[in-house]
Amino acid sequence: MNESLLRELVPTVIGVLVRRGAEVSEITTRPGDEVGRELLGTLSRAAKPEDEDAFLEQMVAERRVVIRLTVDRLYGTAFDIEG
Image 1 (cartoon, rainbow, N blue to C red):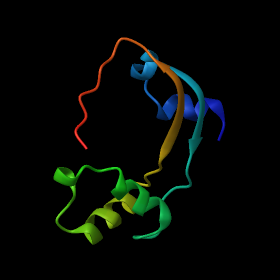
Image 2 (tube, rainbow, N blue to C red):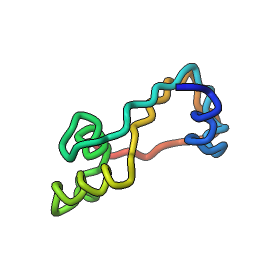
Image 3 (cartoon, rainbow, N blue to C red):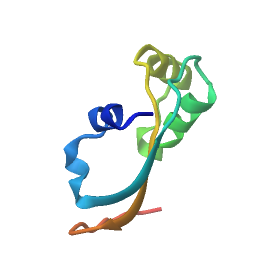
Image 4 (tube, one colour):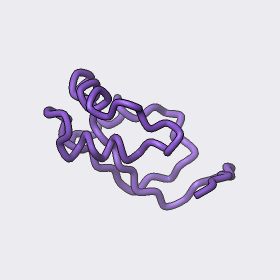
């Protein structure tokens, strides 16, 4: 993926990150494909949709992708994450 498209997809809010690299998946094109399942997997248990099939169809309709960022450092932020 070219860098100008990546800049368009990733807002400048991520300025607190020192990014080493990024990878953008293919667009999800079929409900239940690998990209759609990965998008579903990014949701917390509380945010899981009741109708997974409808969620996957919506991801296709919206032409969603997965952006994977490799981060070297994160400054000025603390995360309170419960597993």
